[in-house]
Picture 1 (cartoon, rainbow, N blue to C red):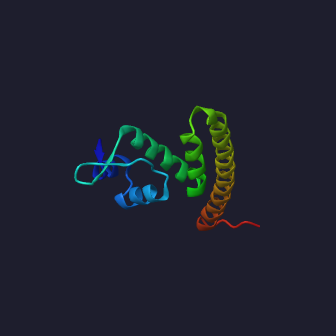
Picture 2: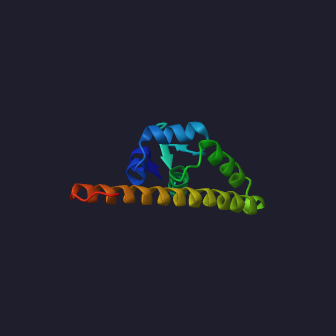
Picture 3: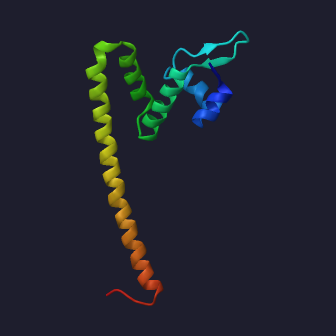
Length: 123
């Protein structure tokens, strides 16, 4: 079992975010020790890492809740969960492609400025 401070250290998330995720229902079943302090299992830490990956790739709290609800229903929802993640993966890939395209535009503009700074002009 891990304290909230240990989970902060291991995940990089502040305690306030962990408490918020618990309140929002996307970090379920957080236990308490005899003093009433939150305690986390290794399984919950793994979930937190996955949760962070989903959030970092643009999944909303509502979408995470929907995924978690499927997860809590057990093996009967494995195909639905897979489909859910495949759809999210597609959105992430599309976003990455757009970001790459935008990065190329920025690189082109930097190259233009490099030429201008070096005293060359474009016609």
